Amino acid sequence: IQHVGLVGAGRMGGAMGRHLLAAGIPVSVYDPSEQARDALVTLGAADCGSAVEAAAAADLVLVVVVDDVQVCNAVAACFEGARRGTVVAICASVRPDTCRELAREGAERGVEVIDAALVRG
Image (tube, rainbow, N blue to C red):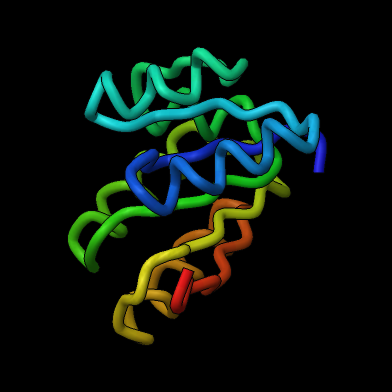
């Protein structure tokens, strides 16, 4: 992994971002909350104004949002910025059909979408 895009920097996403940065992995972060983004930017993450921008900089995008609707919106935005070969990991507990549909859409764009739900932090 050369660069990670992080979409969602709340409790779980923020912790993931901190660990990645501590390991020396470059991170580009987007969250609608400026406060959530700033917590990682002060540690060295690149501040992004959208999920599109975060995905454009990354070869792996971690989508750490709350529910199916947010996942669908975030992944759709990632598709706009992601290059062919980018991996988008859905790190939320969503319906299996949501993951399958997004994986199908990603495959049409040359983007691999995987289900990487987080359980018990």
